[in-house]
Length: 425
Ligand SMILES: *Cc1c(COP(=O)(O)O)cnc(C)c1O
View 1 (cartoon, rainbow, N blue to C red):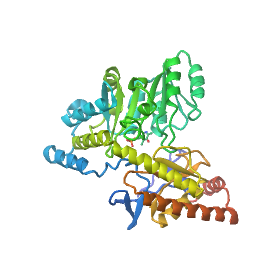
View 2 (view 1 turned 120 degrees about the horizontal axis):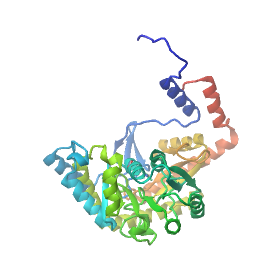
View 3 (view 1 turned 90 degrees about the vertical axis):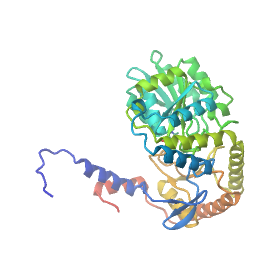
View 4 (view 1 turned 135 degrees about the horizontal axis):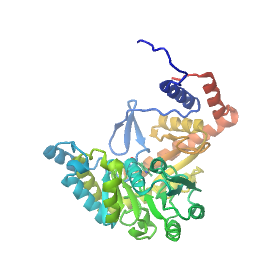
């Protein structure tokens, strides 16, 4: 390959990226893309070994539900796969329309609008609502897509103390004249705890701000009818004027909708760029999602069983002296401290037959690395018991190891690696 003579001392982007990867590896923060075969139910095959999967968001067991599979295959057989264009250019099919109507009815909304992912929905709705001169006030631990959405919208973005409505109120009060969005996860994706929604509704009302709730982990799971965190909190749908619901977690497929008033959806159709300039999801996926929504709506036993499994997990952890975060949802974090320790615990569980990934910075704050257990109706109580036994052993071994062999500070190791420019792996 011919090398150009450099014209300036401009940094090389790909070389810089490689350095960042090496630094991340030195901090025990490297992400690995692994190819997993899905087994039956909550089983996963990694490196040829079957593991019980505690990393999926398939809370209600719909990703492989016979009715969902059949709807997809049937629609694909009749109409093919791709939507062939964006929604506004002929890609909007009867399957999309039927899914939107069913979701609107379930959620008690005038309208919903389909996006290709939750990430795209959050970017689109924030960009449509906000611009320079406006303010977005959001929880410090909101999902990355909400943080990115506020950045992309070009508004002023502030983050309040986690789940602290007083902190939210003060930040809104600091921008009295600006149009304001108050945005929060309904269930926090890495902690499993709930936003103080009743308080936030009041704060938003008093400050004339619009409240937006990302219910990615609440839809299908929370509320008597599975409608999410507002229903769970005893609020009416209109108390949360903008609700984002993803379709790839409890609903087991992919995509998202923004739910709210006709005026909201009319505006998004015009101005949400991630809706306008993106190919419509395959109609067969919409058909499959419609089947999943019907199961999620009407089979309340799935929610009940899931809640019992969460209680079983928490009781079992307490009995074994395992510390957990304060979560009553299927997301159960086990604090590990350093990224290195979280990785070691995750590896120990993997050799014992369980897939429980380590969640490390920057996904969570420095020093707050953790194992994140996701429970599903597909898990049996004995799966949960076996996981807790293995976890208890791994925690004990890791504790003994920490006592006997002090390790160098991980961040220091990262700095050293950067300074030496080492490349790992
Ligand atoms: C997963 C998630 C998203 C992104 O949804 P996708 O459909 O996976 O893009 C958005 N918000 C929260 C809180 C999430 O957990």
